[in-house]
Length: 277
Image 1 (cartoon, one colour):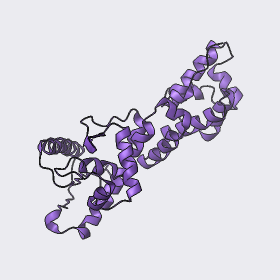
Image 2 (image 1 turned 180 degrees about the vertical axis):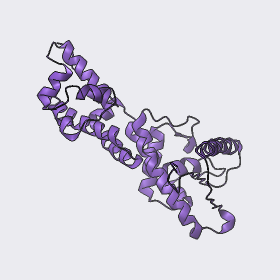
Image 3 (image 1 turned 90 degrees about the vertical axis):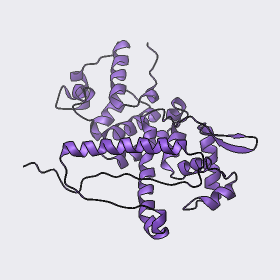
Image 4 (image 1 turned 90 degrees about the horizontal axis):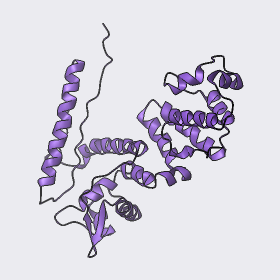
């Protein structure tokens, strides 16, 4: 008998299904798409084939039949259900929810050791500003100093946790009792970690709204414009924003006299439905 596959290595449930099918064939166990449909009580003999090809999604009922027929154990079944729900999620918030669930599964963490830390790096808004604070000309070095500078403030235990997380991700290091930022950029490792950024964007949008009351006009720049665009021009403007963001990063990297951490947001989103006429 062929060694059992490690289901926790997979990030796409369709690829996992294919692997389970191949293993069943190698073990000389009966399998065909028609056989599966009969065992699962499905009316379409080709249903699972359509799922594997990306033309259909597993329903809640058919998902449970996969768990049963392919004899997934309790932990494997739990993982497979969350993986299906993640792949089926239609909004970023839904994907963020199921990504968080997956990254809390211990056996999945074993396959991607830094994945949970990377997810948390994005999902907790203050991790990135704290790292930026450590690049200032007179960089704070203690939890108290960071606490006194960060706006809005977070607790000292959260600051301590953030420093430990940043060090674990090799984004900062301590040399001669001083925190220093390493030059390496953040590597997400795999796609699930990316979805932690949803919470980061939401928090920064809220902070932008709050800044209208918290800071005088000379310390902020909040402006917006509503305009009619073709799809082609909208994509052109999106590209302009991406290029401008890259230019801003380059300017910031050249600044050797950093005194304060700023947040710069860009937003481009529809305010109307597409006119099909």
